[in-house]
Image (cartoon, rainbow, N blue to C red; front, side, top):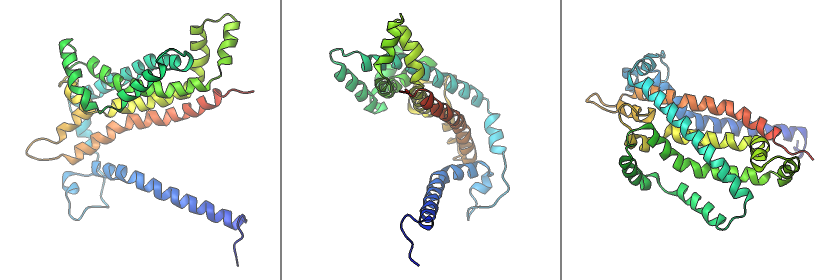
Length: 282
């Protein structure tokens, strides 16, 4: 019996194939995460067992060892302070700059915007040494502030690029209506434009947080034992005559990843709410 295109049986077949394809994609993308999670729940003997163990009794001793390390709470606090500060500084500076690019037709606007994007395209290693020299001259080397400024350097072009698109999509008539009612440009910007551009803020904050939270290179050069971040602390698991501590490394990796995943999960809901509340209804 032939299956007619557009028939209920054909639609059910297409739906089933879509779900199968999505399931395969999810398994492919989650496999590395599940593999790391499995290693973090094994003892050292189980990690190096041959053949590999696919069924075992999970243990949390690796997580206990990581959480009881004296340098883990300090590194977590440093990472939280540095990442939050870098995101807030990038948004506070990038949002007004993006608004200027979107609303003011000043001379050289296109060239300056392109220059910002070029700065984002530069490899971090190209500016690491000059930054270290500058921070050393200013007495900021091995401080949290130097890492915040370094992260902001690469996050700021991203914020300007994302927020400029959101500001350009918002109708100018909204601001003009506020000006007629007696509002200043700054008041219209803070009370009308910024709330409607909330989806852009959420997207930019997620990307900036991921950049700052996961960076290793800048933090490894610009910090010391007191100001090191979590990615730098994780490097200590690859040391000593005993070799790589896969259990501690994978456990710390899961703990480092968890805050960003939680933030992205909750921010996703705010992103959808911002898209619906920021819509202009005719």
